[in-house]
Length: 310
Image (tube, rainbow, N blue to C red; front, side, top):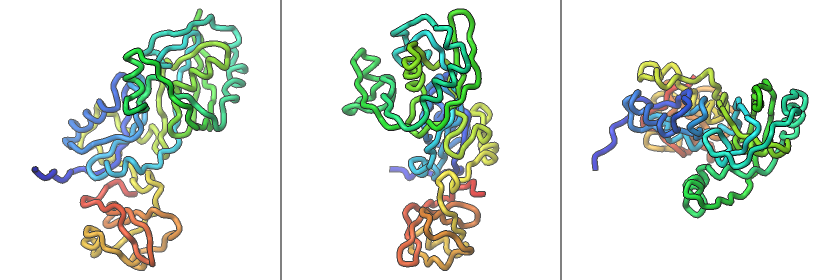
């Protein structure tokens, strides 16, 4: 079997996913634009959604499962009058109601949104990527099978009304949400409609932040190139929530071989109580480690350093 060629780019990158493509499509576009085969992503977005998507390139794909992207922020358009089988505008209406006048009142909207705040149990949409007995829920739903997903704990940190719009028989609330990881905004819209004794679905959705990564840090996918990517590389240590430890360059071989390194070899003081420790040589992330008996014990070593360290 041929050995994998080392990646020329090793970084975490934030891209602005366009509407109308899958997260997998975005990864394919990044592969072509960056001329790199080893590309993955964290935090799937539905095709109709746009916004912040974190991509790993080269060695940085190994970080994707460790990222502390626990809080997500979105701006959503919630359309009242119909509930769909997908809980968004791409699905078929399964229930329609006449839009009540009170839904057009901003004060009423703020009251109902305030009632959504806090920890709660949420039933995910039937059309979701959650596996049930080894089968994706959306696959079963598309085949016409009943999908019974158990509720999961989520938390809504903020639900701020931006505007109430719509004309005639339509009514749309534009809302800025801040939620815990794993929260489905589609399900929030569905449940909001029911709480208002109406019916609702998501008609537009944009992720504005994922953890510490905001929309302002994102690169446009269609303009991506190996040269431009470097300017948008995320600091992997900040994204991981790790403690930075700078080490002298003469320890490169020890790191690469996974040898234990005395803590006193660090070039500056750091908080030894805050693991994991991101070991940095020449401004590149070379390893993640823990401390045992006064030595760094390697947990992940990166043969090609991950860039973007600030």
